[in-house]
Image (cartoon, rainbow, N blue to C red; front, side, top):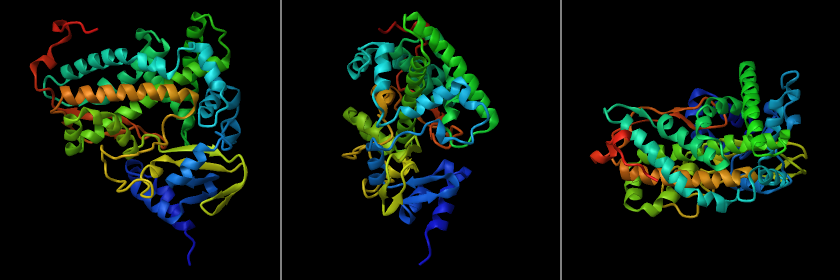
Amino acid sequence: MDSPAPQAHALLFSLFSPEGRENPHPALEALRRTAPVHHAPGLNTYFLTSFAHCRAVLADPAHRAPDLVWRPDDPQGWRERPAAHYFRSALSTVPGADGTGRTRLRQLLGEEFTPRRVASLEAAVERITHGLLDDLAEALWDGGTVDFQAVVGHPLAVEVIGELIGVPPADRARFRALGDDAGRLLEPVRTRSEWSRAALAVEQLRAYFRELAEQRRLEPADDLVDTLLLVFLSGVETTAGLLGPAVHALLTHPAQRAMVAAAPHLVPPAVEEAVRWDTPVLMAERIAGRAGIIGGIRIPEGAHLTVVLAAAHRDPARYPDPHRFDVARAGSELLGFGAGPHHGVATALARTAATVAVRRLLTRFPRLVPAGKPVRRRSFTLRVFADLPVAGGATTAAAFVPHWGRATTA
């Protein structure tokens, strides 16, 4: 019997092609059937594609996040730069963290930075969403095409997370480009230009958050500054990552959209299902904390494990008819969100923001339709939308009242 390794290797590397990056699911499904645990020596990692294996690794605190030792091929002098501290902190915000991240959060933001505090921000989320949908209505006024992410998705993410951690409104808009550049640190493949842009972005962002920490009369040690930076950037990514797939999935599945519009209680499960069906975080990394066997394959201690979340979320052993987008699907369990002390709070707020935005969008813009092929961000690990073109609009003239003619909404 032929070894599955060559076929698995070919399937794996097809993910890096333009076609694979656009739609990785056929290759991931074939890889799961061929070798659900596949060792790729050239990449020095084991790829896991079944839901059971991925969940087991993520739930086991022995399997830690990689640190700076994980990247022996980093450019010379990289580890001495401030961005390296951010990179190390970013990789530590995962399941199995030792709790120090939560302690730093409380030192920075106070004991009120809890899921209860997030719930209290729902009124602010409603206000922010209302204003951004006003902007969308005005942008659609002339019947043209509008990038939903530019007008609503990204601004909502920045405004909501900025509201949570106290970034002044006037300072929020400039963080989008810097956040995109800093996020390149977490890509498996980066050019030297991307290294340089990422390092510069992190240095600028750290300088800003150091000043913000000082204004709060906190001791702005590097780990505290990086924690505040991570809350903002991971929160923005999480919020945009939840909303984009939800809007795209509903607009491209009219029957499912009609179900949600007729039954608003389906909005939260629709958001969850969209993230399962179109997982924005393709994969995550872990280091095996002990030797063991996964899927019949012996894993040595210290081995690198790549948990392929997009494959796990379409595993037929966990989800019947996994390639179907079904807003009424029961018992879904997501592996890609809610990880670590930072992400728990950011995810709670992101879910609130996405739920509010989808509910209001369906009510106010029943004629909204896709208006061209969406564009994903150029990334191997994130499948978030950079451009999500839409057209159409509301059915009532009131939705198109410009800002100067609209009553102020609290």
